[in-house]
Length: 264
Image 1: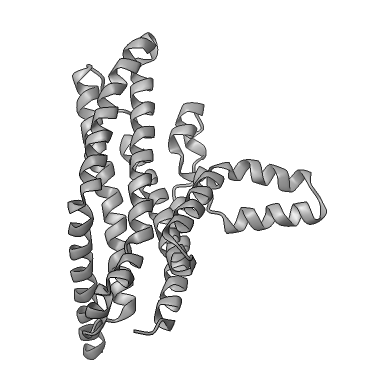
Image 2: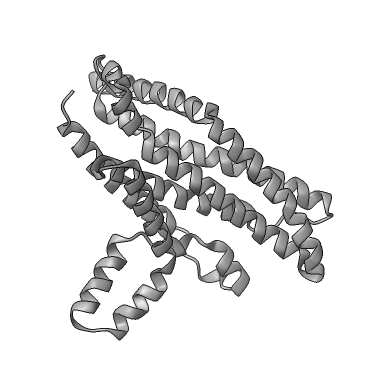
């Protein structure tokens, strides 16, 4: 038992070393700085939109800011998820890392966790700035704001893990990014896909069923939509968490399997 704990401790130390190095690498990227500046500028510019909304200024400022946050975070997360490991292959850096006693699973886990942390950093930074602007305009803390950000982060974690997996099986970074964008877009139309399943038959129904189960349902993470419609009481608090773990575990397992098959 002691040996098991020692091995686990050594394994987690390797994961954390990869995690810390990767997160610093992502945050030092020039694109990250440009993205943050552009995000803050866009959120600040939303004040103009809010002023024009008159009676709906609070809602417009909140919705517009959250939408920009999600879009900016999605763009950078997809980009870094697509190139994080493939660039290591191209630059041969990964050969130096794995020539040491670094398990491939530990390296992959550290990389994926750093991408999840990157999404959290972007959302927390932009979210704090938006709250300061709302306070400046004299508005109170938006209801369930932290819950909305948390669910937004879960969506980003899922698409990030999927993109990492796609980077192992895709032929190019561009293909990986395009497929990820398609999955992200289609994932927000899960209710419509379910409706089509009920209304179609034969091959069409089979196709829509496969789409429904193979494409992540991001609609369950859009708390803002439920809040606006007054259906907060009907939300299952555990479903998003279970769904997140299921997708991340599945994509990590498949990615790790492919990673282990690669020769160095």
